[in-house]
Image 1 (cartoon, each protein chain N blue to C red):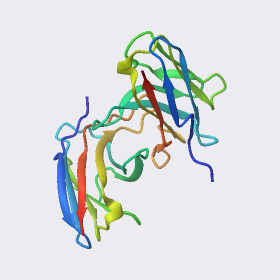
Image 2: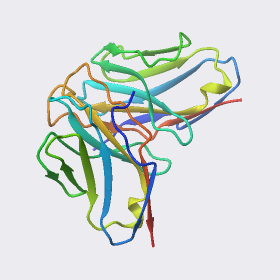
Image 3: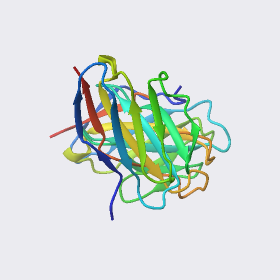
Image 4: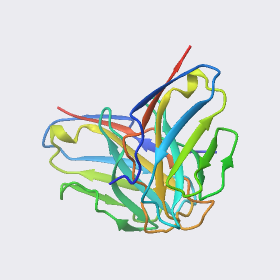
Length: 117
Length: 111
């Protein structure tokens, strides 16, 4: 079956521009996570959705970062006024139900590599 | 912050068992131990999880100490394709609890 899909796979943008990164989770998964990963580091938590609402957005670094999941499935991570330090791989994951043992495993997409020049 | 401590890197000969340790001395009673791995240029992949009993699946075995303060992931017959960064994570089955990664262990399988 289809896994977590992220588009685009690569994005190069100029400093100061606005970008949107899309995540299509596995159908029926209620939880959706965004992470970013810099070279040599583990994934860094950004935001977590349970359904349509952001259950935890404590990892968003500043107000230039925003994410939505309006219908409880597809999510978009939006970055305004991009900076070179935003360059990283942005990972999305989904899980069936993080509150039920046996349905908590997260499935990750291949990521979007964002390069800000 | 991650609640686990892992060695930064390990080597293992191909065909031998790879034993990856993880310390989680502050684990709470309802928190599970999860293992994920990340092969170069891919997203993390779930391997296994457990609460207090040892667990085994087609990928690996998970041994959790009786006091639950540490665990070991065992890949019984390591292959070159097992070269990856392995992450040990503790998390409760709570809808409010997110998945927090540490730095993991970079496992090199040597031919």
